[in-house]
Image (cartoon, rainbow, N blue to C red; front, side):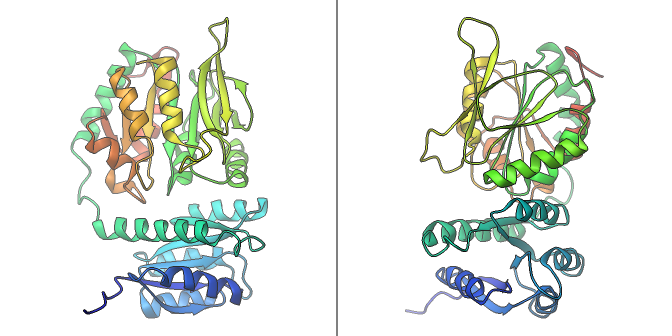
Amino acid sequence: MLEPKPTINALVVDDSAFMRNAIRSMLESDESIRVMATGRNGMDAIKLTQQFQPDILTLDIEMPEMDGLTACRQIKRLCPDTRILMVSSLTTEGSHVTLQALRYGADDFIAKDQSQISLDIKHIRDDLLAKVHALVESKRSGRPISKPAIAHDHHVDVKQLLNKKPPRAILIGSSTGGPPVLEKLITALPERFPYPVLIAQHMPATFTASLVERMNDMANVPVVHVDRHMPMENGKVYLAQGGKHLRVRKAIGTSAIQLEAATEPADALYKPCVDELFSSAAKVFGANVLSIVLTGMGCDGLEGGRLLHEVGAPIIAQDHESCVVYGMPKAVTQAGLIVASMNPDQIAQLLSQAQSRTWAA
């Protein structure tokens, strides 16, 4: 029997020989992936990417001669079809630079802890391979040539719907490709935004902390890192801490809403989990909540979205054309749960028009 030929061509660039070999070994454990070459710095990354035109490049950030951030910007300009997966350290500095790389066009990242990589090889390999396949398959699936015809029409309908049934909160679920979109949406909020915004973004804790810091520098409203239980207040943005689930519940004996930073279920595939946020909100808010599902692989948000749909709460999905990975939005769209498919600019415009108890026409 003929062995299947590799269908994904990859490059690995890292200044550490140990990491180059480790990542190459992880990639080549999947028979559908071929590592065409490896490099040691950003200049190698640019040269090899132009030479081989790979489907995906894993790119370290801290390297001599030329760092990964500089290389990322040039590669996205020279070889826009190559997906870039940044390899970042689990440090505050590493998280800051990684978020900057995502703004420069990197598609996703994996976080490495060199002191633990040999101890947690299966988890890291599974994460790496899942992201490689999701990014490459998303690229190959293509994008619609034009924006969905429903986007503009539903944009008007959504405002009419929200005026009839003002939400008590805005929920956002996000994963691969999400941080730059979140920054766009949150910076669009006016100073007196009348609702709380609750966000579950798939990220480690150091990265969610850096994202909160970044958004606080940019936004007109306070952005809070939900690392413990706290009361929910209008006009604030709440981002779940990586490694914990963000849930809402009614405070005992009052009408106030509490936010929970929960560690259970500990075996959840994603922490924070969008399903946990959506499910809890459906129980507390009923139909009076607006949910938004942004770019990301997998189907997190689908089960919670079903509960929101059952109680009559509207859901918006990011459109295919603008997603880095059309996984999570695709799941809720194909299940018939959404009222609109919009690109980030349209969603930002919608949120910017929120007024106290009304939505601007």
